[in-house]
Image (cartoon, rainbow, N blue to C red):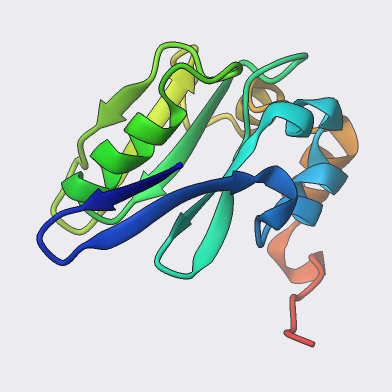
Length: 143
């Protein structure tokens, strides 16, 4: 499904989950990667990113949107799909941040990374790796 958003005719497209740029990241980090079977990649312009559905231990999800037009288009693409209950558009707290589409339960307090990691369905190993002190984390270098 493709939605043309705004006067600039910005295309927002839903693709199979495996088309997402970040598919492998989520596959490797989730406690129950079977939720990817009914997740969807959202392409805004060129780079498709994964909108991970809820299911198993994953109780909520979100997808960033650069502006209101993109947010409305993403919400329309996810509407009615399995794994995306209670879709809501979240306005930015300040003009410097993005809009967001959320689904599932309301996320827990942002100050507890372990609770949030479990809420989003990450494995205990992924949470522990994230919590390592910054100086001991692996550094990503493009290949």
